[in-house]
Amino acid sequence: MADKIELIGLDKDEISALMAEIGEKPFRAKQLYQWLYVQGATSFEQMTNLSKDLRAKLADKFTITRPKIVAEQLSKDKTHKWLLEFADGQRIETVYIPEADRGSVCISTQVGCAVGCTFCHTGSQKITRNLTAGEIVSQFMVVRDVYQEWPSTTGDNRMVSNIVVMGMGEPLHNVDNVVKALQLLTDGDGIAISKRKVTLSTSGIVPHMPRIAKETGVKLAVSLHAPNNDKRSQIMPINKRYAIEEILQACQEYQKIVTSRFITFEYLMLDGINDSLDDARQLIDLMKKFKIGAKFNLIPFNPWPGCPYQPSSNNRVHAFSRELEKAGFAAPIRVARGQDILAACGQLKSKKLE
Ligand code: SAH
Ligand code: SF4
Image 1 (cartoon, protein in one colour):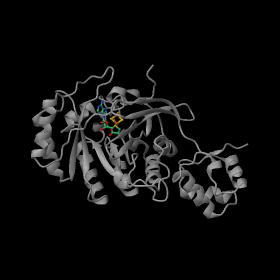
Image 2 (tube, rainbow, N blue to C red):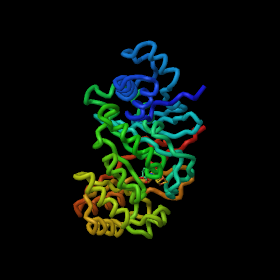
Image 3 (tube, protein in one colour):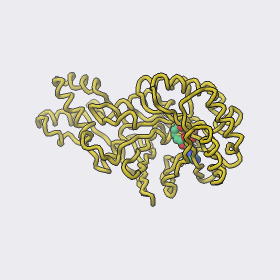
Image 4 (tube, protein in one colour):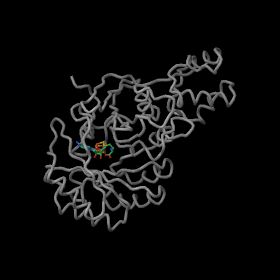
């Protein structure tokens, strides 16, 4: 018998084609799509507007799979982290970060990461494989299951309301699957998260940035972390491939396509490395030169076992922020969330802590 086909991760056209192959009408494909992505159904029995025979036929040919929750941790600040396992045994982490009236799901795109930033726990792990579109989308679906926020069509006051593609992996090293996943997550007939509520963060893989603008239209965040190429190359070796100037040009292009949205520049504050007032001034000059609608997000460094850096002092972070704000840039300091459960930026990994 042929292997069953997994439905999560398939788009409308693919589901229509599969239904046509088994002799079902187009409106049945639409119903199936809605059960999957609007209702969040996890079994065919739930699909009560389909006949028993059809449900049996679907169960015979297809599967609806969620990754397995291997471990879960809840932080003092209510940040929630899951270690998820896919069919081949590979594992990643997904994080939910609640705020007063909303909340973001931080999703992973790869097992490990090939970029190798020296400050990042994920980067110290090397790359194992890309996640499929289904594996990317299903992380969000698991969180919706947990917080019981199906169907997609109900209410505005949702707690699982935003998505940040800031978990493990470099999304633009897995661009085909990431584009497809973002299209599924933002499809108005399905999961229907607004593009304005989705932010993708990249270390600056220049050749793929235009596709994200053209094919998804989500908000962009760039991990800049340094005001010049010398410093950036030291902490992010990928900078030798795609230098700051090329990244900023790609950002200009991004803003031409996805208009009226600021690009967020993430800036990790590393003690004695990139946190001086002179660094801040160089950063301001750079932004003025490229005339990008920019805001900054100053990220306190989250240490992990064996890491080579120290976080900048509070005084230095605040002075840096004030310098940028004096020049007219928003530069809030990110509040680290879920630090007690290693759920904060750059702390994710694929192994369960024993
Ligand atoms: N690969 C993408 C997205 C995942 S990393 C990227 O690099 O943008 C998400 C963010 O966490 C990035 O801005 C990254 O630089 C930051 N980060 C990595 N390690 C960190 C650490 N130890 N402390 C705080 N932030 C970190
Ligand atoms: Fe990869 Fe992003 Fe970590 Fe760099 S910061 S190693 S790009 S996950």
